[in-house]
Image (cartoon, rainbow, N blue to C red):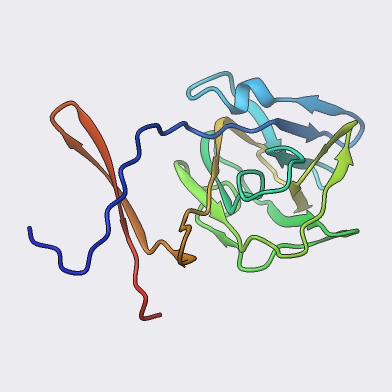
Length: 189
């Protein structure tokens, strides 16, 4: 195919992002599920149950877009039934994330993601002794069947760095032994 006015950038290394910490608060104690959350096809762990349970996710405390993710992808082992999750971030208090799109349907649909607008006023806080840019999924209506996952992948918000143009779509391509990523964007937004 022919592309006019296109701009391609070679990416020599792509590293799948992982969480620095994944905590599950069961209403009484924090459970560290970091290893399980970062291991595709790993051991199932609870992510939502009663209305005092909270899933906490962070990529660390260093300022920069690598730690301020715009979503998470879920590989669910047990689909949740009957519950509702509210997504929040810290800006001096826990407040609702804006622009939340939950394609998991409150953990009722497997292999989907939850995305949000990265907050401009996101601040670090400490959860269970770990400082970071935290987001949390707080259960507001209890699940009759608790949701479990075998993997939670952070989603980066990638942009064209010199123009700040957000991506409209990404595609992974294979050209022989060379893996390629294609990114579509428009300056006519």
